[in-house]
Image 1 (tube, rainbow, N blue to C red):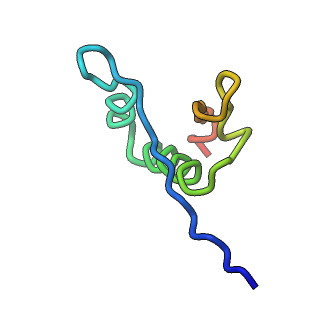
Image 2 (image 1 turned 30 degrees about the horizontal axis):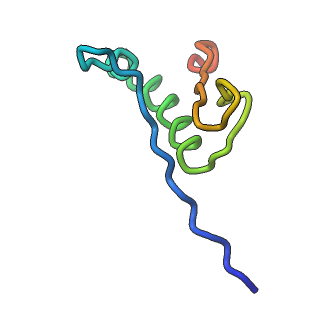
Length: 78
């Protein structure tokens, strides 16, 4: 019987401006710790269990190379 392959970690890439700043990463660092942890948990899920799909990630464009991770504010407040 063939063994299940080890999960592969996909890279998470944040938007970077021409000046080199990463506004989304900077915004995440400013959030309260509980909210950062909740979002971080979702990002780890996407990174290690790809493809994830909705409601966590939505594909952008025609390919599978770019996706948008989503989290509703009300989900953070639970």
